Image 1 (cartoon, rainbow, N blue to C red):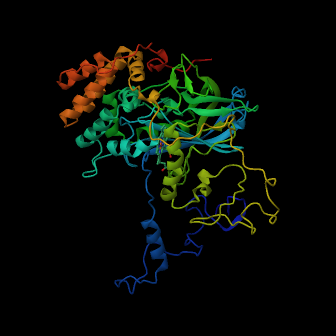
Image 2 (tube, rainbow, N blue to C red; image 1 turned 180 degrees about the horizontal axis):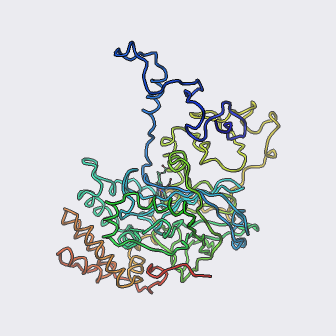
Image 3 (tube, rainbow, N blue to C red; image 1 turned 30 degrees about the horizontal axis):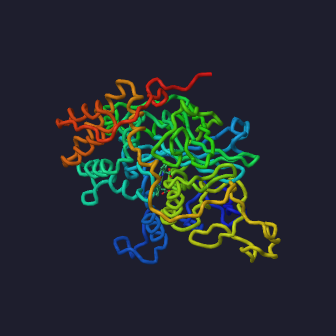
Length: 538
Ligand code: HEM
């Protein structure tokens, strides 16, 4: 038998439970009664019907019948590992978060994922990859829920159901990657042109990473940081893999999907097991917190835009090492619940409308995926610091809360944990009064430029990377039935770059349209090119 079960508040909850699976001297029922036979049901005679009174049979089958929980509505296919994050202390001038302090070690759990495939889908498909990290800091959990692509398809979270409906298999046949699913995806992104930048990254080699160990990660949104003096900055989070950025080529990706659909999870688990611990350096692009929240003309609240690293270098602030595989996939990888609202003092949200919708969505989905409001009591989600909340009861409540006064202010149960009249402080205090709010569904005009950065990305690629992008567009659009969809996407590509458009059009056997938007002049960014992009050696 394993250790005694301890409630999230530290109080013992009763019976000891086996932490190691079936390794005791004998099997028991779920309430500890010794079993003598788990191989034969209780019957009325050797050849007779099974008796309803066989509680063990009913419990065993009942539990099996309910082993599955809903897969995540997106990012269903994932793989996780434990590790440690060590701060460099270099962020102190901009961020007071304790886990970034010099030499501070923080346990972490990371879950990598694809976005669109179901739980049993293949690893090396062309897709965005999730890179979600839970830091169990001394100030509570901080979740950095990012992707391997620094921009997103949409600028406003209200479009998330649309983009996912367009990318998931068609509801009629549920055939992933079916020709019809290509039509819906390209139909959406060719009409919703703010997706163009993300699509360019997806069609590049970044869409088919070689290994989770060779992927970058990005917080995507702009966050607000605050230092010990209360000064604020805006910032973007970056993970840079110590092994450098490497991708598969399309033919490899397709073959591996058939030969070993678990390629990425096997690669990560094997590397960790053999002691080849993967590492990523966490870096920050720090930007001034101006009232307009722009930098060099780039709207920092627009998640379809990057800030080129030439304009704002990524400054290293700590290092992540993954050094322990999971003990149980379900308990850890499947039940982990990330949330962007899990922040620590020194890191705060911004008004990016995508960010804001995410703050709602994750809590909401976990309420049903993990069956009730107590999912932060599941071991993988528990913080490594004491919890003293006033949340009570609900499905799957594991704590045995003592006392009578889960409210404040109170004068019982040891009194009020806060001074009378002191309100909870936001992590960042608003310096100036907010302008009078006006309700609107409009987006800022600065969100309207959908082509400058896709063009910057394209022009930053090497010739072979460009060839891969052309071949990816040609292959994917070639799977569309609808001629009108292909033609519309070609018009989008014409606005990105005439050469890109012409080469894809040639591959599809269609005429290349002319641009309808005059391209802005951009300077190619070597940091966006991935070939030869490796970790700077010490
Ligand atoms: C799951 C990233 C946008 C809703 C995830 C996961 C990642 C991620 C990494 C997997 C978490 C895990 O491993 O458990 C991102 C990024 C986004 C983005 C980087 C844009 C910058 C959105 C938006 C919404 C959304 C706009 C909704 C409005 C969800 C939901 C899940 C999820 C519902 C499933 C969570 C769960 O079941 O625990 N996302 N996402 N995401 N995302 Fe996002």
